[in-house]
Image 1 (cartoon, rainbow, N blue to C red):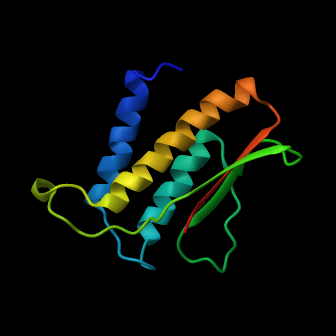
Image 2: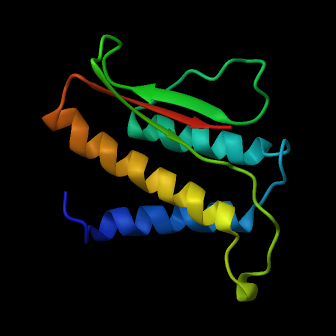
Length: 122
């Protein structure tokens, strides 16, 4: 996949806007959790978050017998900051993780069928 993929760029810009426009403080990230569940499911990830975890997402993709596992983690809380003052660092970090998860699923599933990807965004 080309790095200058306009469709991917547009998709991830929408992710960043969603996260920035709907910031949630720590342990209050219910809408962010729903958004991430939906986003990751559209990429083909299986959500495996324990029910007792009220906010956050644990997701995986790839065969369960994978001998290679790639793990990623990110905070999902964000401070409500006006757009003109700049982006909250948490939004940028989470958007970066969503970007990596999007690119990894496209790149690894064809080339490395025995690779598993796990994402934890508590």
